Length: 493
Image: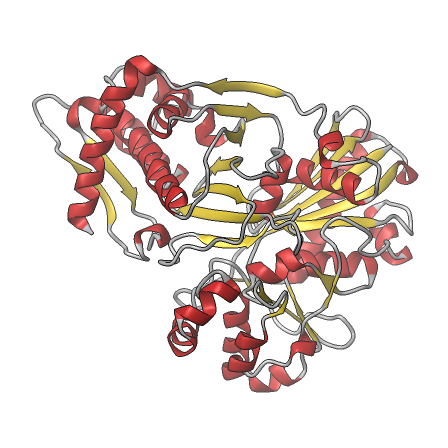
């Protein structure tokens, strides 16, 4: 019995085939092999053609199926993960009316800010748990204001994962988790967010009907099954945005559990069992995959723009001839605290956790007589770890109890120095697992199809493949370095 997970990202679409009873990854596929194009026809814009996603998904699944060498009928359920916050506008025939305005498009920032001011924080925060911001609802308002003729043709609006599932099944539906990430769900009234929809003049019937995150969400049509090399009638039984899904892939479902990623940007995703929000909107709160009205699970998402991209910058500065393993070895040659050198890794745009301040990247307290490239290499990784810890302090302020940090064995979490610095300053154990978004979506499909009796059953064979504990011998030096780093940041802010 095989489960298929599809992870629709903004760079590529990945697919994974997982043997349900053993958890073995039979095969994976990815398309394109490089990166999907993002159309930025104007400054701050970012769009992708949904048809490109569909073609990439078909190719990724086809590649995985060919590699695994299994029959179409072996796949018993499909799960979908996707890039969050995007807007797809569909007409009555289910066709996309325009390119998707994706997550990193900033054209609707002022629209969201104006709505937050007009409605007031006392209305928005208890209901939406966030400022309307640059999320899906505000993107739709931009279409209404700037493309009114197209807006009149919209039958349904949906998120990228809703679109992919719609093409697979012929049914356009969404989830509470998905609506919450678009600022389209009212946590107080437990219904679509009429307070914001009415303010924007958007009719509620533009939203798709809701289904459960885990459960039947449609069955593959004969046409889509033929295109994907699957069987008609195969159920789609799970969907979630990429960060909630990443948390699911790491079995992060309960209060106090934390999922982290450290790719180009970094994310810390903590789970709370009561409805919480940050009064300063430095972090975002969304319905987690296992959220229910009578048993809430909120995902509190902290995003750090300058993570892997900062480490890549450090690599270029100290010698682009080094690979990342060599870079880590170089950084290990410097002492804890980088002999006083501090790096603020905020050179990749405005940082939400800093109140949307754009402070830029900084290298501070350099001593030209003492500091060499090993100090720079280490200070960059320490600075990234400190930015994670800074954000985790905000999560604590919001009332989230932080326990073990779980992460996939990838990107910066491959660096022992980065892991040790983060474990020391956060005073948390770090656990590493061999998983990713597509594998998580496959396991989610198994839960939704009832193949697994519970999430605990689904992750019974998820094996820890490494980890890092705080080093008490280094913690004082690490904390001293973090204090210096924090004071440097506060002076700039």
